[in-house]
Length: 507
Image (tube, rainbow, N blue to C red; front, side, top):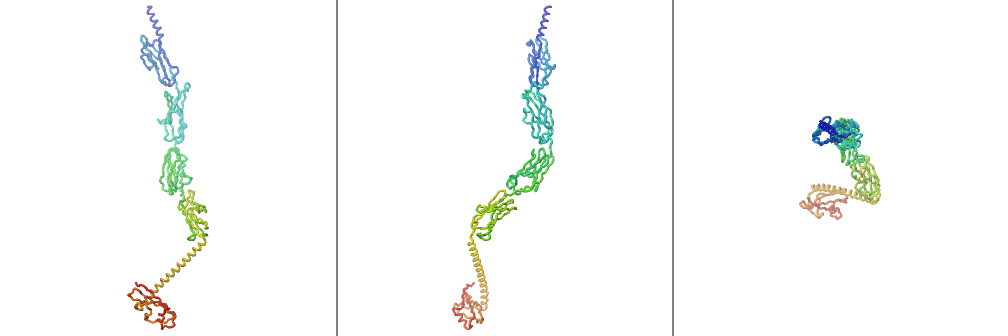
């Protein structure tokens, strides 16, 4: 009886000495590791150890072991205890340990500078959260999303994101996330809707941009189409009024666009306009007239003087003209590269300069045309000037030549008339008198009829040659106031009588 009592007392003391204790951290934050330890005096007798949370088994071990929660979350908060079973031991259970996991930082909240921004305007997004006062040294990083698409450079230490311009296609659902740099805790904000508002196009205008402020043939021309208001993708197009066909089209996020003409031609002059459209309505600009200025071509110098040759005292006209070029054109005149003067042509074409010549004015003359787009020089024209004596000699020589020419013309006409008259008279004599044998001595010639007694005899033409001969002789005489008509033969035989023999080949 005494022995039994001693055994009971020993067992009670042993059980009291071998009670279980659950060891847990006193303060736990999100992301912390939690180690639970179940301890007793006779752990070597333990064959089964179980950890519990809120009366539910968490884990069962076949030997003494710790229970580890790698990264605590808020849901890990609860009532924990442990229990054991062992050899020659009754089942044991530790006291309950209450663990509360504290929030490391609050759930982020997405804020925006505007949830209804105007299209084309900037928007600032901010992911706002706050660390626990006991853990202010924890570093966080942030990321922003739109419709499951990451914005910006993904994770950043800055809680803000700047969007330079919002467009209509940027309308959607936005949110942000915050996490520790150790990636243990990540939290997401609620989704927020951002609706981008579009503004219609207004005040479309067309401008020209050219080097020097004026459109010149061969140079570059830029047509700038712009609007003062309007958002979104704007489609710009350019037109020429004469044809109505489109010269080009551009679509971009901008209030202006440019169309470049690399080299302007003279035919490009005319009226132009542009249109702009961002999906609401197509708006047209005012019509702009674009003149094209033409550089001057190489001029041609023409010299005009009173005579065939230039002489001292003459008035020489220098006429310079460029066949192409926009007015006004300024012409400069040169003598051996020395400026003589200038003359303007307000409406284009040519201009003249008059010069009274002296002996020193011989040499090369040239001119230059300039309309502000570049000057061009003509080819040199030589001028030789003679003195006043030489000029008078030239006039006398010309007068003599003209006089000789007149005399020659008169003689030629007289000979022609004479030949015609001789032919007509010869044919008449041949018809009235037969031809005789050819005689070289005029004394052997007999007349078929007497010469009439007149105050002055008319010429007589007689053919004295044979018809078969190749030579025909004609005898012509003229008698002025003879004393008597009886001795005509004696007169014919006289050496002083006017007798002319002429040989004529027969045809």
